[in-house]
Image (cartoon, rainbow, N blue to C red; front, side, top):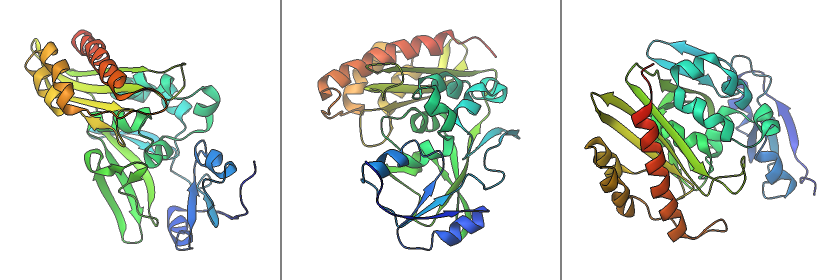
Length: 281
């Protein structure tokens, strides 16, 4: 199929993109790995497509005081190869090879994945597990939104129709940082049936500040807060049992809710082992 007719504009700057977004039914184009497919199936029919790829400065990865900043247009492949990401955000480094296939990672963008907010995607859950923030620029200026407050519902975020997601900021890992990631997919590169991104801080022989972010189980990535508390207390079996109250996965075309619930527990056991065995950085 071919997309319905639309107008096309190339943004020269973030301010220009925001100006163009004043048009009725305008959409932003970054990597296009999700948008182009929905355009071709005519699930999306924007009147205007605004191409962000010529906007300077949106593709950088930089290490700053206390955090790592990933520009919205940074390609997945760029993030995957980044020495700064491996050194300072190990959870993202663990997750990147699971995102699609090489052709997708060559074009898809970090910011695009966060903005699209597919509930089965890896990066929104990673951002939630890491306590990251999203930089948004709109008609009223720039603002930062915490990941816990960014994902609102199925493909729904804190972005308004006139906003541009410009960067993501993630706290830098310390010597005590621990990270874990695992997912179940029918084939490597497919969307996950269930996945888990986790971060924690080593505190002696225990874990503290555990954050468990599941994806593929609800309309948004979900933190398993009761399981987090149990894991901080060193009670893995209690954490697995707590998932029954933390998660309520529904049936979908991939698997029924009962299977997803079982897989969530299996993943927690695997990821807890990763968190416990992470070597000091």
